[in-house]
Length: 76
Image (cartoon, rainbow, N blue to C red; front, side, top):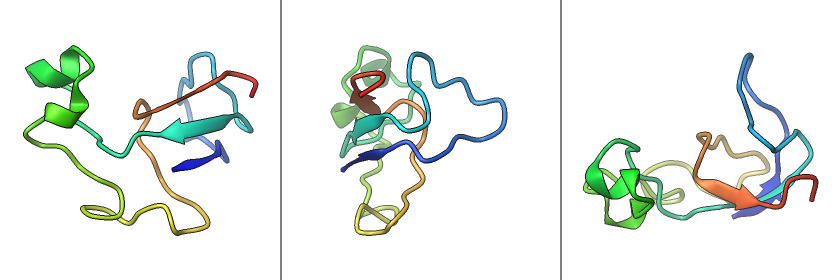
């Protein structure tokens, strides 16, 4: 999925990104704490989640995404 950051929750640190930036959202969301997730291999996570399969996916006008499973060019 590709889209713009529309908003962020109160107190959310977006790092170098800002509301309005274009981002690419990963299609495999890991748990964030297993040995695979800790080294950036979320697609090997035993507790992975896929948008459109486990949770409502990218056909909606707006999609809620956890902080982290996306990348892009800050300011882009």
